[in-house]
Length: 211
Image 1 (cartoon, rainbow, N blue to C red):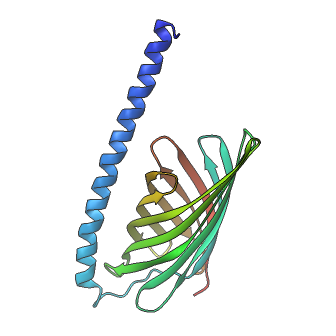
Image 2: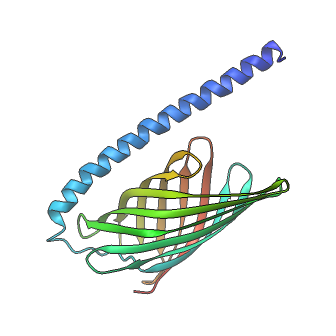
Image 3: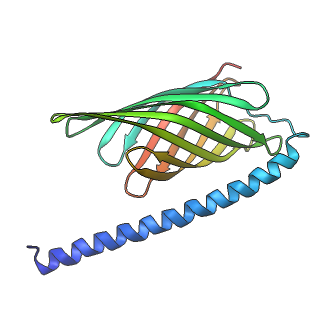
C-alpha cells in the first residue's frame, strides 16, 4: 500500500502523462487537418509546379530513445515516374535491460508538388518488429502510414515534418520534426525528433543523394 505522499506523486505523474497524451492527440489532429488542406492545394498546383527536392537517397542515422535505448537506422528512398517513390528502412536498438529491438519497414509513397521548394509526402509501409529478451523472443507485423511537408528553405537547408501512425501490437501515433544541412549537392547531415507521448527519440545522421 502506498503512503499518502507516494499516492500524490503517483497521481501527479498519471495526470501529467494524461495531459501530455491529450495534447499530443490534439496536436496530431491539427497537423493532419493542415496536411489534408495542403493536399488539396497541392493537387491543384502539381500540374504547373516542378520541385527542387529529390527522392533518391540512402541514409544512415544514430538513434537515441529516452526510454534507455540506442542504436542505428539504415534506410532510403527511390524516385519512380509520375511522383511515386519506394521507401524502406531497418532500425536496430539495444536497451540497458538486455533487450534488443529490430524494426523493418518497406513500402511506397506519393509526392505532391505544392511549389518549387515545398512538397507534401505521403507513404504507406509494411512493418515487422522483433524483440529479443532474456526471457524469450517475440515478433509482430503491421502497417504504417505517414504524411507531411518537406520544405527547402534555402539551397543548403531543408526542414520537414510528418504525422505518423503505426498499427503494430496496437495503434500508436507520433509527430516527427527534422532538418538537414547540405554541405554538398549530393550529401547532407541532419537531426530528427520523434514525439510519441510516452517515448520520444532523437536521431542524427547522413544522407547521400544518388539521383
